[in-house]
Image: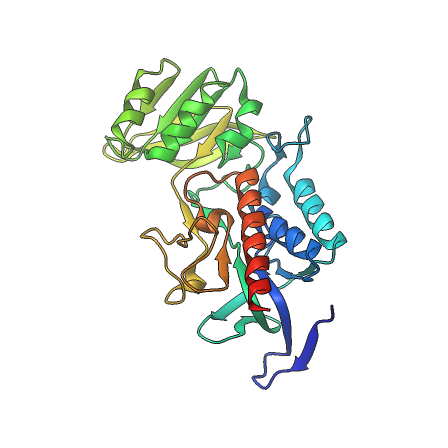
Length: 320
């Protein structure tokens, strides 16, 4: 199946038409590409800035089925990519910058050109909110994490800090008590925002303690994290707190800005889909963390991507 390439008239480079365009190359996008490629649709997958999404910044993944010893996140992302390409998916290192779902075929502009597509699957994911303090970026994957489920096992018998006061922070903090000997929640306010039931579970957990009205000013260490510098917001008092790891759960930001006024979203900016991964625009689907504020796991994202591709294939078949 050949891609039709023509020169566009808008000065943005080559214009390419494809049956299916997938925006994003995390687990959802690459799984969708695999299923579409096996249906001989030769889908185009726009990678964005990285292949693998958040998988690419996860040190080791031990909870993806089929890899009992675990494997580095970047390696898993590369395996997803290789498998999709094996069946004919076309992975393009380019970033979508603008979409128009009011015309058919749908029109997607990128840094390097313009695509038109009969169906589109959006898998642009969500970005963890960062503290933005010194040391955070340097120690990501070496003591700083944004996923307790992914990395908790590596802190067995150690002490960790959890940053945040919402549902995610307490859920992940409680989970981390399965491994860590001590979990200290650092919260910038004097009360939690989490649901009452989660608050009760956390406050009753003997492995958890809380530092209130406090922010982290910096994260320090050598090869790995060894301590954080704290500052009390009310008194201004500064202190140093020893820890083996820092888990940051201050929310996620869905990468949906490009779809404002194009697709239906919830109040947090996640794309709204039905059980078939369909958005409110016929022929446009969303999968993975862009449409999942709840689970945010590699396996669930991949499953959503596969579901979106299967439904998109049916849609194309029905349209002839």
